[in-house]
Image 1 (cartoon, rainbow, N blue to C red):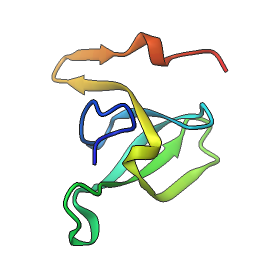
Image 2 (image 1 turned 120 degrees about the horizontal axis):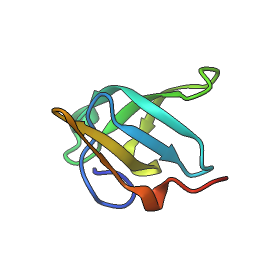
Image 3 (image 1 turned 180 degrees about the vertical axis):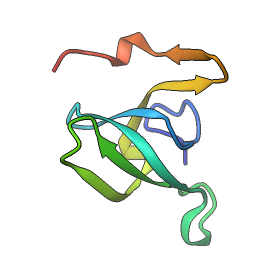
Length: 82
């Protein structure tokens, strides 16, 4: 399952935002977790380093940015001050 906005499936290193507006980085991905097609689970480390979400459904997060080679694609509309 892609991120909440339906944009892309998760990969390591993605910058994401949770439903509470907290930013973090994907540190692990399990595509089609538990043999369920389209159910992607991710592990996220928050920016402040204090919160580590062990396993979460990717659909609970919004993709903020992704490194594509030397180019960083950023969804500025998702970087809202909270």
